[in-house]
Length: 290
Image (cartoon, rainbow, N blue to C red; front, side, top):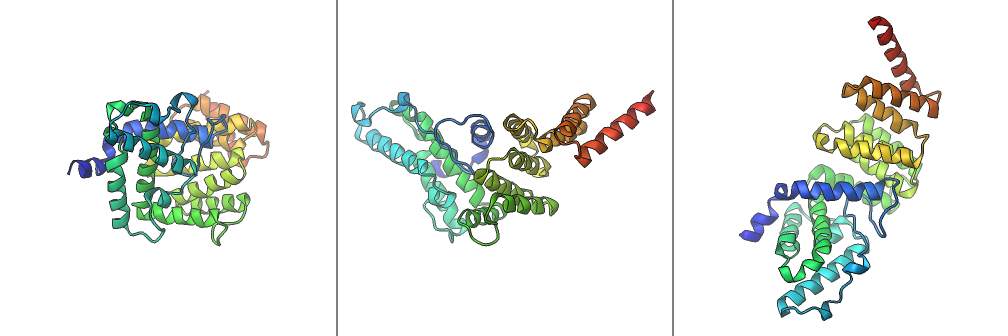
């Protein structure tokens, strides 16, 4: 019962987990230099362990049970470094039912929940957290009907199957189509897939916009804005990112900041229609206030 309660209570870890995911998402999807080995796509982001963490299990004084757990952790961590998809992380086929997904998550949580790590194995704490993040990410996506369907579309696209497009530009176009249909999670997946194939700042900014527009993800607004700023760092002429940040600033009531972003969007692209329109409206408002 203890393990089941632990596995069934994702909210109890949400704050800590959100911070880890946000930090690694910025490294992985933004233009800042990533740490050694990362994995993209609304999934687990696994970093290559540093030399300091590379301690031989055989050199540690452990009980047989702890040594076995340490080996499981090391093996699972190496497994995730092979860039496993969500289904593989849970050890399931893509035809798995929701009950299969739930059962697999519970079983893995019994072994790899960070709270299960004994004091003697604290040196493996970072790896344990990465493993459980991957397990939780897989469960979060696959246990939700809409997100699971979108993820299957992404996997098909990654494999070159019909429906997702063969190149980055086509996936970007599909993402824009999903935006118009207000299918924001599907849009994000398409934009991120395009960015993975061709790391253009525009694609990253578009993924951030899909997150920001999704009313169910208001708590991820900071992440969306960070991705837009990462896009600008990657390409100082990313007019899309400037324009989006301008709109956000206007919505937040900061018209000085909004005007600055719109001006930068126009400097990057003098023909940007929306940014030019926003600047005209701001100018008209200023005249009326005189």
